[in-house]
Amino acid sequence: MAKFDPGKLSPRQSLDLRILQAAVKKELFQMQEMSAFERNPMVYARAADVNVYVQRNFAPLEDRVRSLVAIESQIPNILIAARTNLNEVLPKPYVELAIQIARGSSDFLKKNLVAAISGLKDEQIRAAFQDANRRAANALTDYAAWLEREKLPKSSQDFALGEEKYGRLLAQTELVDLPPAKILEIGMSQLKAEQEAFADAAKKIDPTKSAIDVFKQIQNEHPTPENLIPDVAKDLDKIRKYVSSHNLVTIPSDVRAKVKETPQYRRATSFASMDTPGPFEKRATEAYYYVTPTESDWPEKQKEEWLTAFNYYTSDMISIHEAYPGHYVQFLRLNASPASKVEKIFGSYAFIEGWAHYCEKMMIDEGYGSPTGATPTEEDVKRAAKYRMAQADEALLRLCRLCVSIKMHTQNMSVDEATKFFQDNCYYEEKPARQEAMRGTFDPGYLNYTLGKLQILKLRDDYKAQQDDEFSLRQFHNELLNHGMPPIRLLREIMLKDQTKWDEV
Image 1 (cartoon, rainbow, N blue to C red):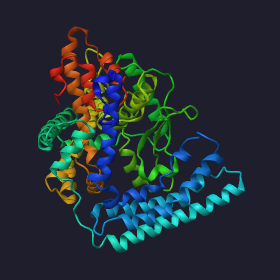
Image 2: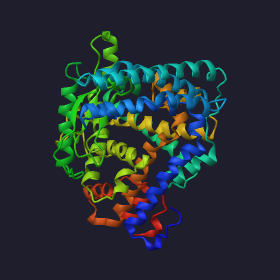
Image 3: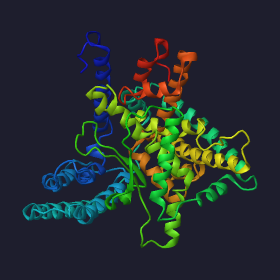
Image 4: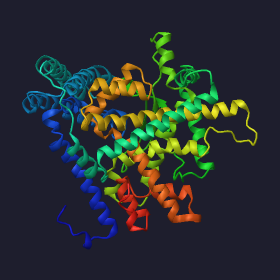
């Protein structure tokens, strides 16, 4: 691709070339610089991720099960290759997570996948599936045992990329040419500001309590187990109407995202998620907003703890992020846009997650949850403060991810230190804080939620200055979402006329 002469390409072709180059560099970075096949046993444990064949009816069940048989029959070979390819000494967090994933995948194949294809009528295909499925599940169980026996005892804490590689990851995949230390400085400053906003909002609700105690009180305002799905669906419709009536972005389709319970086979790893079809899907075009309910056999205390995360304020923030105007609207605009195939296939992590995370702040800034009358009651003021706390809570998590990612990969922060950072700075309990810290060891790119959000806010400021009196927020959002999902640096070239502004971050 480097042999293409950009001078001979149209602006659209030139953009496509750079999107492709960033996508290829990302793949190569994972294979070469991160040595995924030699250092990361999770890569092989995830070989059994066959969700796509059961979550959408894109073809007759018989055809999809034939595909499952073809894939599952190769899983034992893939796991044999893992034993050959993996280094003698592996990073401990990778081994621990790979063991969890392999065991979880084996259970998924034995139970959930079998249940998901229960409607299969063809007995010959069923027999082939049962054989391939059993072998694949057993191979995953054996792989987990091998990792535990052979790799865990001699594993190390050597997972960090180092400053030079980390800087290249950002420059090559997101076209962000800032030193990691500078991004960390910005992140720490934003973290402090967001913590202050969290505390200020808490004072409006109850000045006699700590901010964390106030937020715990808010979390008790949640639906009953029976009302969880209907309440989320009702509130999602309210959010959609708010986006439309306030002219925040043009929603190009009346096809709604359907709120449904997360399928049983995905509940272990999902809280709430958006499942949209691929950009070229012609058959299974429905979109689902999945919400994971409580289980009927859970004790009351466990049900209550689960539902606190679906308190009405946080639940709305998640719906804004996942659906309106977050991921689902971005998908609808991508499909309706004149974007090329390249622009519809290859996406920037910072653009996709940055947009959804930006939407949380933008909606609060545009008055969502705030009083509408000229003389708000005390209850109105408290309600708005609860929404602000919920939004700040989501922002604090993403800011901690940014800071921890850079500290772990460039400043020798340990998993234990990262766990404590999440506990101290976004007020997580030890278990979820450790899960977040562990994710940072293998997904340094999880800084992109905040990095993308900040880049979009910077682009918006520059675009607003350019458009002056002609600026409209809806027009900005429509234009932002009209060019695929490229690194935000490329959108600066498309949307800003002043070339001296293009390289600003």
